[in-house]
Length: 323
Image (cartoon, rainbow, N blue to C red; front, side):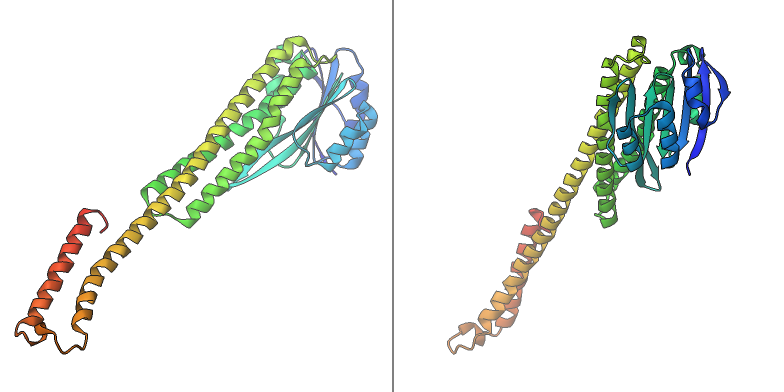
């Protein structure tokens, strides 16, 4: 069983009274009145009740029951069905809460399927602006879309701050596997945010073009405002995606550079150790005719030669930056 968050009738920009779900259609048919119903996780019975009262299209009800649809706007006669998503981020985990909006002449119904920021704040904001609320259903629709659009901003800002912190950690310290995994997860979250924000551009554009009885042409600038906000959000998310991608590329380059440094050091020490090994190998051969073997100071001379050779190689590699 779902929960009725709020259900009320409005007229002339003011709240008339609270109602039950069964009273909705009667009030919606009164001239100059509209009902605003907010539900949380409604079940099939409640949606069927609303369908019967407000003549909601069966395909819209079917989508509302199935859930997990992509953000979209569909028109059914003189009624609208909109699917939008609100981001929720807790302890670094990003989820999306799906909301279905049914809008028509005399009613606006929201069905929120999850625990996101309550639309009670939207209702309070609208009730505090009676001159705009007097527009009716179209202003409430704008307020809902604007509220959802604004909910993406703090999430993207939090992800941006984490990406910047990881970038500083990666540039200033040795690579950490946990940081790399975290960075990859943040990039994936940015892509998911873009996936749900992008259709909002189309929705706001469509609302500016539609000619519906309950959508006043004077409300089109408000829907254009939503489009501007969504477009900015898309630009911010694109920038975030690029930053995350570039940071991952920097990680790869740094790792390659550090491996190259280690390989050069190994190669330099191998060359240095090869020199005394080669000299010792020559004088370790069992030949009869080797004049140096009978020289009184031959042992000390060879040690000195090895020391000079090793020191010279070490100094050369040090100057070249290999050590």
